[in-house]
Each structure stands twice: as C-alpha cells, then as structure tokens.
Length: 418
Image (cartoon, rainbow, N blue to C red; front, side, top):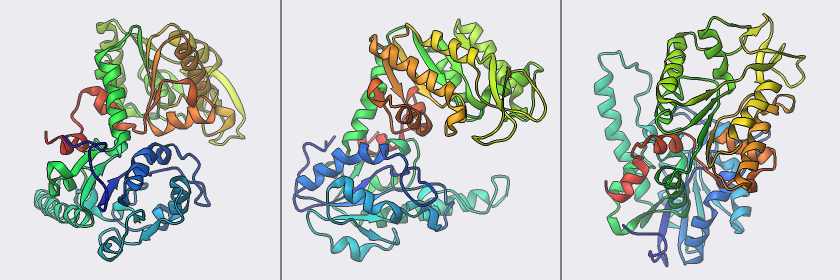
C-alpha cells in the first residue's frame, strides 16, 4: 500500500478528503478548529513537497441541497491562515470545478464547496421511503449517479489522499467510491488517518485493565450497537447524558420533561441485563441538575434522576453523580470517552462533563491511556483546558465507535484494497 511519505507529490495535484465539519457560531466563525488542525500535517506535507492541493469536505446535513449556512466558503480564509498560505481558492460547485482544478499550480490550494450539497455524495435516494415499492430502483439509480459523481471528483487530480477519519465509516462518493478511480500507487491514507487507526489499535490490541468507557449523549438508540459491543470488552461502563432518563423511565421513574425514548425502554433494561451477565460495573447518575427551561439561565433544581418533578428537565449530572463518575474512573488504565454528561454548552450545566474530563486527566497523569472521541467530547476537553492532559483526541465520533466495534471502515478498506 502506498504511503504519504513514499509518494512523490512534485508537480502533482492531490485531492484530499478532510473532515472540516467544524462548529460555527451565528456569524460563521469557527468555535473549535480541532479538525482543521488535525489535517494540517497532511496538507502541509503535500504543499512542501511540490504538490497542488484540492481540499474537499462536507459540513452539516444540508440533505443534498445548497444552503448558505453550510457553505465551506465561510472557512476558507481560516484554512488559509492555518496552512500559512496567502489564499485558498474556492470552487462554488464541487461537481463543476474542472476549470479551477486545471488552473491550479504547484503550491496553490483549492477548496471545493460542500460535497453534501449533492445527494450523490451520500448515495441515498431522496424523497422516497424505504417502504415504497420503487425504493430499490431509486437506490440502484442513485448508486450509479454516485459513481459518476466520484469519477468527476477523481478527474480533478493525479492522486487521492483519504484523511477524514470522522467520515471513514461511511461509503460516500468522496470517502470510498472515489478510490476506485485511482490505482494502488496513487491513493493513500493521510497522517491523521494513520494516527487514528493506530490509536484504535492501541486500545483494542493491548488493553490495560481496568478498562472503562464513558458513553454520553441524548439517545440510547444511536449508541446501542457500541454499548452492547463494549459490554464484552470493558470492566466498567458509565452511561450518562440524556440517555440517563430513558433508563430511569424504564424502571418506572418520574423524569419530568427530560429527553426520553419511550420506544427504547426494553432496550435499556436489556443493556442492564447484559452488563450483569458480563460482570460489567454499570455506572449511572443517581441525581441530576434540572432546569425549568432549556437555557443557561434556567432556574436549577437538584433531585434524584428518577424523581424529577413536572416542569423540570434533567440538564446535567448531579453532584452525587459527579462524585460517582470520578470514583469509577480513578485507577482505570484504559479510558474511552464519547459523549457529554449534560448540556455542556451551557456554562451552568457543564459540571458533570467537567468532572469526567478532570477525572480522566488525573488518571492519565497516573499512567492510563485515554482516548477521547466525538465532536462533543472533544469540545469538552478543549473547553475545560484538558486537551494536553489526555492521551489521544480522535477527530471521529461514529468512525471511532465503529472501529472499536470491530467493523471495517469503508474509507480505510478503499485505500487498502480490502
């Protein structure tokens, strides 16, 4: 397999799939540039070695239609500054950038507009449900269009570099299908991808115990696969965030106006049963910090997670939960964190996530290997000033979890020819 260090980029145009799906404020300013910084070693290597650079990425979920708030044009100047170049040229239509790509010279940078402005990127039929009899025909047609889209993207460059770990678990036009249009000597993984794959291998191939995973977020349904898989690997599992209230409800608790998945109560009970069967210590929040509205300035009430009055909703892990989480993390030698313990974006409801982050930092200082993955978890460690106090920060959320599940990532397989 070709590697980025062995490839001669001199005089070549390289099209690089990055993950620049960065959070923006209401004025289009980047609030966390972790993903951009993560891609810099690969991008700078290509430029430093005489190549021309074509950057492609997605942003947000525009559902196959152009939308100004998801335009990558908002970040091109920030990318130019990060790369240390005078200008990043911009192609306003990623499927019609032939002229811009052809004019690109060595040392120059071109950024394509959001790939997901085209439904062909994700390759899913639009405006038709799976139950519709015509769905399969529409799916077949879209797959053909996806190949054409990938072929167009490939035509812009001499080589392809996959460096978007955050989307490596998706078989999209730009993450996997495009690789079919380059031979083995002209496609490779970028430095970030190599680091990410190695970090996952460190966790799975040489687990130091006790191994604890902290899974947060709002929904059990979006994490059930990884939770079930982790219950066969970890010694302890902290489940926190919004999913807390689905578990509380499953036991007949009162959760007020807290987020809940009423159709997943049996799934929650099944998770508890599997943890018990596998001898895994399942750690849940006994109390919650609640708000009377979903805002930073909401009035606060601390109460048991299963006894939340009407008119209140769980917004953060309570003080007892914070102590319980920290105690569970203490002494662990391998730590995986994905998902916050509450609405960490609100300063008044970020205590649970901060407690987890600080406990992980302390354990890391005592020799643990800590792997932080997922946009919210990464934002947490950055917000709390802990980024340099953990072992590794992954740019991927879903990709990291699927890799740890043991699934083959299409974005990796496409390069390796698997």
